[in-house]
Length: 205
Image (tube, rainbow, N blue to C red; front, side, top):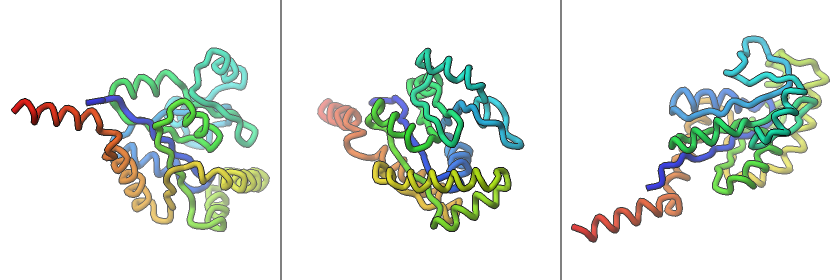
């Protein structure tokens, strides 16, 4: 049976709580999480190598030149990217890897890994989204407005995602996303080698 790990891409509007959803998925269900690289400044409490790999623009561009990213994109004046080496090592070891990335990057991943599972996390309404961004208290109004404008653009690409998870109640949303991942693993086409092995074993008895 094919033991290679699967790639799970989780995107969502800024402020929808996707980071918290992903954190709980890792804590409660043991998924591997690919830590993204970024050129943005760390927020209070964020740790380099744990929350993000914080890079200068020159360092980031150097990694682009060496094909060090599965995908990278510019988002609200900063660069974000998914380091290639960690993801491929984890999948080869049979572990399912979550990528928490924005829409543009998700489309790039899907082109390289056609069987990647794409899930979009959203707040229950645009008003709730704005309230959450304001409630974080980490960014000026100008940046919040940019994020809301970007959300309007991202809404056009939600149709590219296979599943939508509404983050109204956090625990319920985490359970929903985990159930989606389990459901995908149980699809017949993802278990063809298992089926063949079972048939061979039955025929040999």
